[in-house]
Amino acid sequence: MAARADGRAAELRLIGLEGIPEIEPGDALGEVIAGAIQRSGLRPAPGDVLVVTQKVVSKAEGRIVVLADVEPSGFAHAFAERWGKDPRQIEVVLRESTRIVRMDRGIIIAETHHGFICANAGVDASNVAPDTVCLLPVDPDQSAARLRQEIAGFFGIDPSTAPGVVISDTFGRPWRAGQVNVAIGVAGLAPVVDYRGQRDGAGYELHVTMLAVADELASAAELLTHKLAARPVVVVRGYEPAVAMAPGTGRDLVLGPERDLFR
Amino acid sequence: MAARADGRAAELRLIGLEGIPEIEPGDALGEVIAGAIQRSGLRPAPGDVLVVTQKVVSKAEGRIVVLADVEPSGFAHAFAERWGKDPRQIEVVLRESTRIVRMDRGIIIAETHHGFICANAGVDASNVAPDTVCLLPVDPDQSAARLRQEIAGFFGIDPSTAPGVVISDTFGRPWRAGQVNVAIGVAGLAPVVDYRGQRDGAGYELHVTMLAVADELASAAELLTHKLAARPVVVVRGYEPAVAMAPGTGRDLVLGPERDLFR
Image (tube, rainbow over all chains, first blue to last red):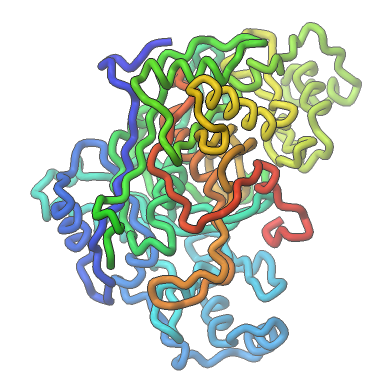
């Protein structure tokens, strides 16, 4: 069982950036993050991945809804009343949904226009001002690409070698307790690493292994960015994909019904 | 936005242990892992978590089936023939299942006796000798507790302050492409961190946030332990739960149908 060719132990470092201020609509988030990287004494290194929580991305992009401005439908009113919820918030959830997967006990599991299936279509009242809610970015892949470009610009790096960016959000899932962070936007890295055709240590040809590494990076970062930490960005250093793959997007992580055996 | 009380940046280190030999039935895996920790120049530190892939645990516990010894049922034969599979392997999958969730395109999504829902009931032909398959540990929580005890013994640490242990496996999931590693066995840490009742930075009381941190630790470690790496154990250093919680088990991550809105 060989050590790495360079003799070093394989190591991944996750560094939670401190000192990122409260983000306001219109803020140049990429520059804010780049500034925090610089203040922490780091400089982007090849292979770095930045995991950025959805909340700060949505705030920078102005994806905040003031509930006082929302006129709920009768349907929203009825569901909200039954479960003791705010009908305006239910209305926002319905507007962000293309399909309701389940609607029970005051919770709506919805498919968003991005194709994500998650609670309340990603609409969330935590870590925002009272009587407002936060929506998912319109196009999280574009958000990730923009952040990557801004960070490359700040440090004067060739954009093609700039750190990869993962935008993360907290999703529930069937069969298992609790939520985990997953990747909703990706730029500059392969979100899924495909092992098919590779041979393992025993010479066995792998047939089905495809690892959603962008989700794993998002989950790893959550251990530092968690909702109580006020630490929305993590630098992941030392990640090396098991198989070289072309970069992709967060949409590659959305599995259509025709390919989804678990659905 | 405060930095940590001690002024240091929050950092998580994941160290992939090198030099763990091929594991055979009956091996004292805890001692093998402890030896690898020692050879890497590390000593367990408070809060460390060891993530150990299921394959080495199963091998040490002799959970290997020689396919030549398996007599497939007619049902296994029919399904295998239709999809070009080995009927003996299908038979093993059926024996490891308590319920078939889906059976199509040669793949069986099954509920195991532990309550896990996963492809082929966790039966796997990768990284084992030809014409054998590997089963999940009978009781992965007990396996994790035993490893923890052996490692504490090796280093002469009080078992109650020994590193937490997560046994990980690679599971698919609905709606999202690719697989991720999750925790199937846990000892010495809280698998789910419950934020309910905590207030976020904006003073909002969190109502539903429960993070499956053991799954996130398993996913993080997969970035180093992946199937091509021959590196089955990762030391996670620097993890601090967001909320202090009592230790639990991997069974806490299994969500019954009555609580599962996503199912």
